[in-house]
Length: 423
Image (cartoon, rainbow, N blue to C red; front, side, top):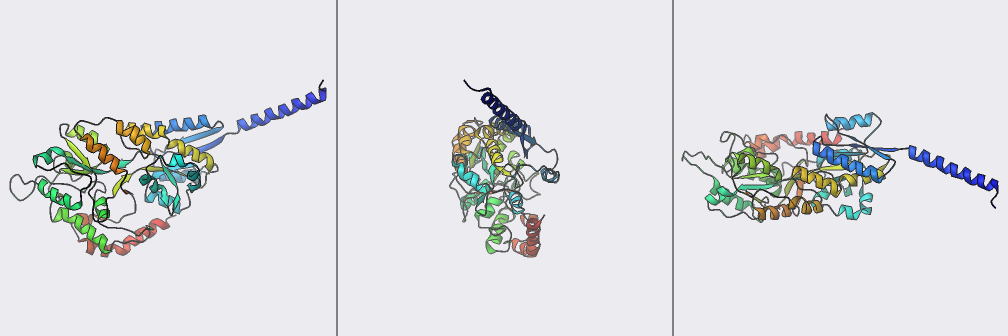
């Protein structure tokens, strides 16, 4: 028979355990996620991800803050308030590298090394945009705004032109473009053009694929007076100001993507986001899609997406990494891919969700599959990859590239110095 003393000691330790457990349960760890998007589908998908995370981690609360004002200002306010966010999100490109440069972001290379299966779910060509100086700093948490060439299949058929292939070149583009330009009334001023590069950074793939570079690899030293950079811009501007296969400002109402739906150009740089636009504006027109043509220096393509990053001030980086994984999970990115009808940086979501979604019968389905699949296999650069000087004097034909870039060489270097030295 056990003594009453032994029973008492046992009850005492049981009581202590209950107290300890109660104290532990009452202490809640809080993570702060500064959500970079206000769009309702983003808020809903990420709140669902946060809820799943909290279900998997009892005792951990996540406060998701979606700023209604400027995101950078909100980020600063969080730091000043003494409650810095554990996870932030930003555009790939110079916005990310500036945060890294300032020491505000935690290197997640070691976390990623322990989660290889998770990392390998993403397209390598997109994951590299979370890399800087050999280290991994962020994970894609958004849809991918992809950019390739759309063309009016009806116009091509009328001109007897073949279906475009993904292995076409800049020389092919020039040859085809000359056949697309039309002067119906014979007044010497075309009323239909081949292409426009005046939508958002549409000239950039041409620039890079012809060997142009704005900066060196560090992104801190300008290179705009190098022969390859000047030559690349000279080639681009000849499309408009010499060959006139690209319209100038006086020849069309809009030189942006509306030029395509207005019938002023037969080709345009865009992505899946163009589908609802063309279906509304020109519903009976047939379209083809193809990769950007290859230049002498390659076949690079542009993208934009957001990555999630762990703050260097986070007191719970291990938990923040797990939350970041939930924000970039199959469930979260599948929901976003469906909501925005856009590709996902995760290849499993891209194949199982986006590529299985129906597309209008006005789009060449075989080309759609081949081009979108090929897009993730070519080198990709961020639209906001480096801070830029004002390029309008060159793009609009006001000054030759060599003259203008020589004039602004020092001022552009000052722009880069100011950007990287900003506190």
